[in-house]
Image (tube, rainbow, N blue to C red; front, side):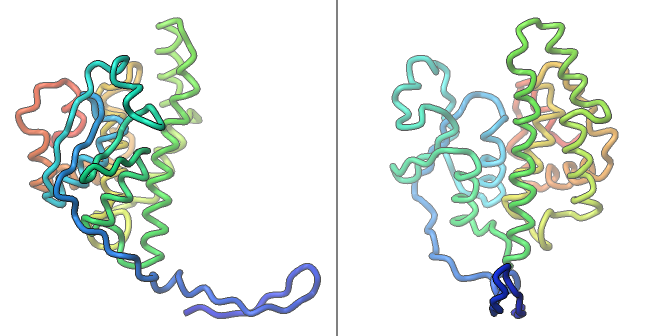
Length: 245
């Protein structure tokens, strides 16, 4: 437990205790749902970390691919977007929210508060990739969009800046936080896989060549048997970004 004193702007002296940084408070246990259905499209993108976490924990789920989004979109209320997870009929939206829920019932939340905070930093840091891509989403000219996407990967580009930070954070560690797999590892594995799988036009599939720590991390997580099995016998071209060579 960390204890100390500080004086605020009015000069009042206060005691403060930062106990949760050292020891995690107990959370209500969440039982594993008997039926899990993940709704998304036939691509990795924002659902892949969820798939990876469920596969790692050997928890069965239905990976339901939505093919007629114009027709089905109004049925996904109130948010009208994907991914959406059904857990025994209970509907959960937003990818990070779903991932954290899966982490609760799959026991993939880091053991200590400090490790959990570090894990969340990486999870939300991976969300920054979407913000970087958003800068190119309004470009209608195909060639200009490709040029803008390539620029994201160059020094000073939006993607490059995030990759440099993640490369430093992961270092030579096998896992993001602590010494065992957590939802942060699923998030980081999915994020760098999304970049290198050819899913996004203009992003080279060898983008990780300049980030040896991230490449080593990706290979380590991708070689875990239950995760690797999820990419066996998959004919879709994007699998190259996830299947360990």
